[in-house]
Image 1 (tube, rainbow, N blue to C red):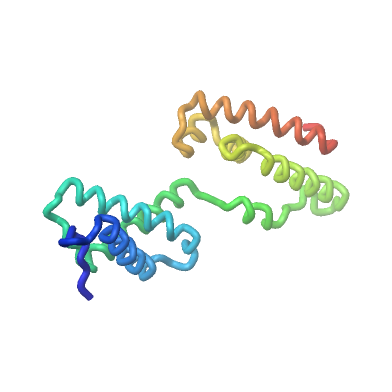
Image 2 (tube, helix red, strand yellow; image 1 turned 60 degrees about the vertical axis):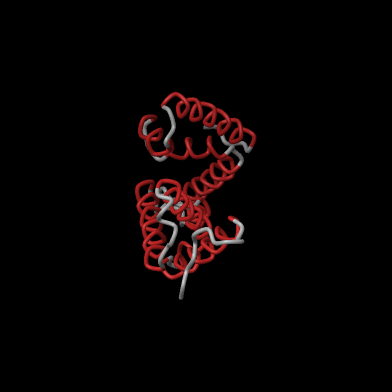
Length: 181
């Protein structure tokens, strides 16, 4: 298989990028596990940016071998796996499907009340703007403001404001549902 990603006579720059995108997509498909299929397009964009940056830095490096493209795809995948692992991401729908732990094993009424509160909190969190939801969720999981700011890559003050406003909105939502925090 011969790959030509350099500018050729009569070819538009867009055609070269499309060829590069197609070849990188093939390389990425060969290394990407099914569990990350929903992120494949993002990974492809990251890999494309890496190759385009290399081309800008070193215009003489116009020919991209299949082995090189495979390596770029593989490193983009590894970086994504590390990033996800560092943030310990959990999809919100996975949290919703998680079984609710009983509060008191022998008290079904109390357990049902706790499950109702948990559902109300999840519903109210869903209604928050994404940045507030992320900040409040980390706060509710026990992270301090500096820890949450570091995990989210935000300034401490921004994170603190989002938590404060998010908790206020969460309390208001819970009050409307008849749950007094």
